[in-house]
Length: 214
Image 1 (spheres, rainbow, N blue to C red):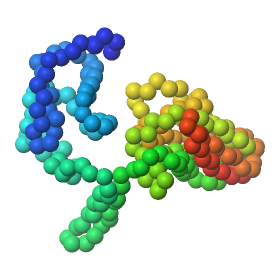
Image 2 (image 1 turned 90 degrees about the vertical axis):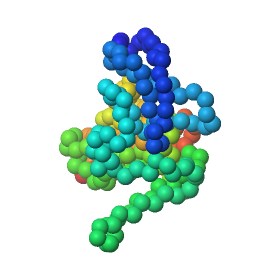
Image 3 (image 1 turned 135 degrees about the horizontal axis):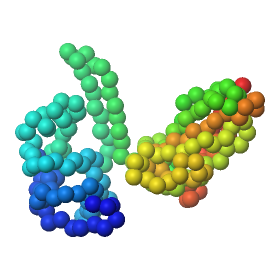
Image 4 (image 1 turned 180 degrees about the vertical axis):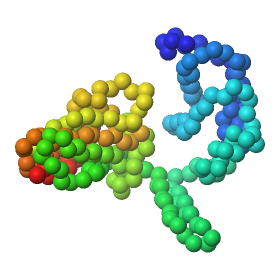
């Protein structure tokens, strides 16, 4: 109830249609913590919900869920490439490809724009991503980053989307969260010219991006 003291719950685990379903007696609680023990390699949870009753995949709830996403629960995992192609009335609308990432090797910095006003109000958002040697996102990277800014801007804030994180938004260090983070740069009033954002991991991987302020 308080987020500090945790009580173990006796539960029965089953896997209907590829989902992991944990059933336990009704109790009064505010936080739930799940520990995954055993099994080869790393483990992660993509989606987690607490429901008031034992649900089955044929329930209306899951029909609503599946109306807004596509899921193939019985496809076994293997390293490689996964490609999804969308069609409407036989006409291709778009496609997306994800590939299994190798070892973390590079930082990718993507600024939402390269030119800003030197008025002290203009902001630039720089997305930071950890990738392998081929540029594939490393989705499990949690490296601690150090941010430095030189020139016509200052570091206004950093974040990574982790709602449970306790890291300061204004420090010059911040961890990646599943491979991503974002840095916010603010222009300095009346100071035109270039600004360079440098990002470095504790392991020595580093990258920089240059912005222009006018």
